Amino acid sequence: MKAVEIYTAPLCGFCHAAKRLLQQKGVTYTEIDLGQHPDRRSEMMSRAHGRHTVPQIFIGDTHVGGCDDLYALDRAGKLDGLLAA
Image 1 (tube, one colour):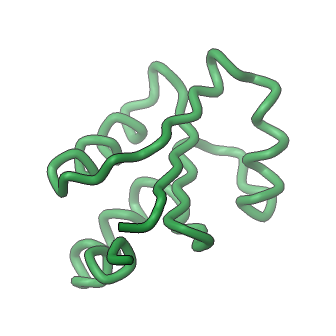
Image 2 (cartoon, rainbow, N blue to C red):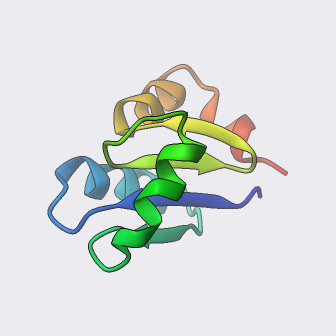
């Protein structure tokens, strides 16, 4: 399975929903909590091509986008393939 990274904020409902979907799929991910590491926001924005909202989700080298993008990939049946190594 490819490495998954998700930039989050503590009170973000969309962040919790995205993490819940990944957990339901048995995906281990690295969470970067911008509440605890605000210095990493510029890193996230650079990787996410200027997007500044959370969550921002990366699977391997692919920038998935936010929660809605993650769920759209799942509904389209493309998320499992992207996660596969």
